[in-house]
Image (cartoon, rainbow, N blue to C red; front, side):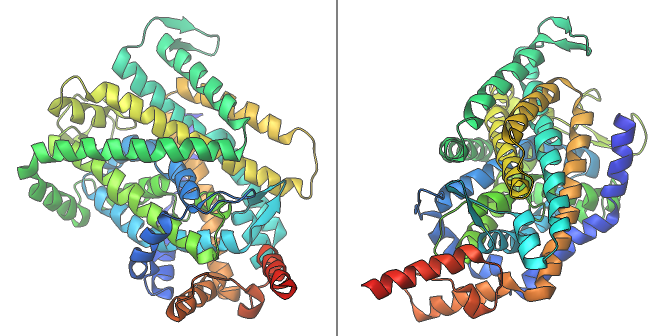
Length: 502
């Protein structure tokens, strides 16, 4: 299976997808006049908005849900893989894809808000919805929905649970080996997989509100704790910081692993981590209750900074500043840099665990095990919500009973299997899922721009209302020439009716 998955990745993650991710971010940055920079202050203001309705969640909850998808294994094990296979320069390209990707995140999240719908008492939206309504291509929307259900319900959860299993095994030992019939696995991984699946089942059977309530508590706490720990380690090695910056920037343009490896691994792991352009973030963005679609676009743009420029950078600096990494060359057992044992794989949390352990003995392995559990578990919850949203999209046309129940059982099974399988296979399968969604979504949002520019029209409208100093923002899609935004049309009609009655 590994060979088949690697072959697919070679096609999906060709240089064309790398150029597409960077090019789309640059394109939307230019078209919005670098919205991710100009509206940074507004992003921070919107974060404290706690407006919530019976049908939607608050902006902060939507941020927490999307961050639970963005901040996960990619921030710990993914950064290690980028350094291990692409060299220190890959970190620079992760920064680049984050900066440009913040504009992509603005566009896709604003589109999700514009074209969202009400479904069984809650808001639903995402690429499938805006592809159908803005492009008018239902077949393309269905392809995205099916690909996303498979990616988020089957392929991606295993990456997260696998990293949890590896971290637990490293921290507490593997225990006895058990022959399951599917293979021989450690008791630690089997037990961890079972526990994760049971807890996951309890939460996902409670619905999106329970997911939002859980993530808005856990994600900010764990993110802050992780950044504080990284800050402590950096302070203890403060004299090394200038050299690390020089190493990252120098290796970005004259990379030891080759330019293709540095930029390729930087972009691949950057997109995997921050999800900009991947099409997963817009699902949580659509669930938020906001006055204007642009508000959630800005909040989701800010989440890219939190994910990559804070959390991923924290991991990278801990690894590089302590020298807890190897850089693989081409060929089995070939290393361009070997600072630690050759038996320690780059596709896992070990680089980060060793980095913390070397500076704060007795803390690293256990802390990363707990951090990965919460980061990865909340990411699995986000994947479930995304898959659920796309099933809800399909159910509008194809009404088959039990689809949601089947999804719950499938994702719980995928989580258990992912915990016990090899790290290389888990990551390779995850890369297939991310790559397919990125291809479909980025092409979609670029076509939508050339057809009607809805995200740009909404931004200009929002900025005009800012200049007027309005106390409460409104969004009139008909006035802006945006078709298919039925929720906003109905909302405006209801508000106008209330005004007339007064």
